[in-house]
Amino acid sequence: MEASIETKASTDTDIINKLLGKGYDWRVRPPGTNLSITGGHGPVVVAVNMLIRSISKIDDVNMEYSVQLTFRESWVDGRLAFGYPRDNTPDFVILTAGQQIWMPDSFFQNEKQAQRHMIDKPNVLIRVHKDGTILYSVRISLVLSCPMHLQYYPMDIQTCLIDLASYAYTTDDIGKYVWKSKDPVQLKEGLHSSLPSFQLSNVTTTFCTSKTNTGTYSCLRTILELRRQFRLIAIPVFFFSSLFKILNFGKKRKTDYFYTIVFENFVNFFHTSF
Image (cartoon, rainbow, N blue to C red; front, side):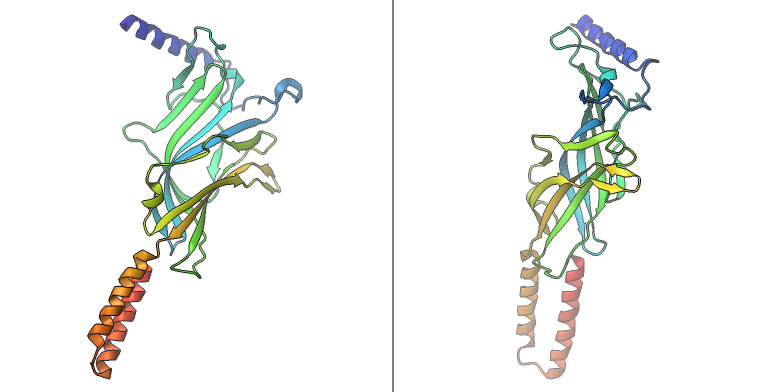
């Protein structure tokens, strides 16, 4: 048993050393898989999916929200193929964070702050399949901008976005980002009802490809529909309004004015707290 484990480890190491040897330049993008283009040097297609692990804060004042993702990308780099179906090579090998291969230069367009998770080790997976398909997975926390319309507060529905695009590669290089056909956006169990003051009522995906004076850039968009939980605001306001009327019953006008000021200050404080 120990010998077979050592043999597999040796095989994986040999494969990785051969793939990342002198003939591989991680700074150059792979040739792509569009056979209709002479030489097969078409743009790379990047398939994306993500798991939304948590939405921890929705800030009405700064118009932003915090989200933690497991973000995954997949593409084909034919230079890293090392086997054929049903041969005796491993189905895939796993690279460590220090072993460099070409990767898409993806970024989140509406990101304000970002953090990679490094405990106990970098939360990163790079898997190279025998046909040259690469799977890249990383856990990240983001603070994303979310312009909000509050005219219907506290019965409002906000739409917040996660926009992903290539920073430098145009569609001539990265032909397009595409959503994975099955479950492009997954939600951690219980996420719908665990948000502070909101309920995640719907999640959809679309495209947001844009054209600028430097070229056309492929873009993917996740749309989060957030419905404010009105009862969290209505119940306390109703309670203190009733209490105010009870305490105010039969009092003099001067006392009425005092309670009015106290109640208004409380309501203002309560609204800004949410």
